[in-house]
Length: 74
Image (cartoon, rainbow, N blue to C red; front, side):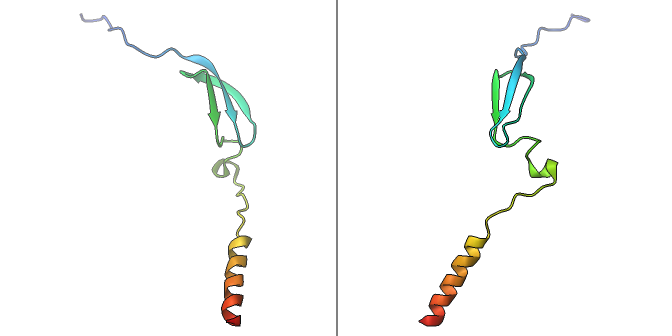
């Protein structure tokens, strides 16, 4: 058996279409799946782009101020 490599059961790789649902970026690669759909890709992920998305923090502050105003009138 020396020198003879056993048969390995590797999955078949196919050309795959990858699509990002956030930014709409599409590219091809090889995978065992025919199509991949991503939530976030390297084009729109903040860790890769260095751009942070603005989170709506105003609503939290506004709710606090409304509660404080109600407590002040009571």
